[in-house]
Image (cartoon, rainbow, N blue to C red):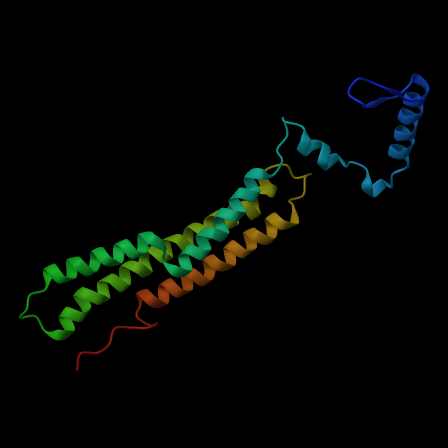
Length: 180
């Protein structure tokens, strides 16, 4: 039987409390085995054990670096603008049109490609490190599937970014226009 307190909240008597505790214990034991806490969940909850947060962060960083490698990023834009300015300062008004195009636009294009390639290599290195980490860490603990997926995505973006950077740098992709 519940009694009312001054705040109006109900409290349980001793017999009702014992029944509630017994019901809770029965439902916890009756849970299906797949719903019970696994060893991995317990290890993740323990502060002394690795939880895979670092691997997950590495996978996300790899994917982000791969995306940056596709568009060049802010650093690539700044390097391109700097190369363009340097090209304008180096060329004189007497220089030929082909020389001006190469100095002003070609060097800027190559600077963008170089930085995109560096980001692609970084994405590849981080992605491969995340994928290889379980082999050197705790071999008994499997890596979470989402970490593998994101890391493989970062590696794939890194490969595509590196391919595009190489094509841009070699002028095979959108090369400089001819002057004549």
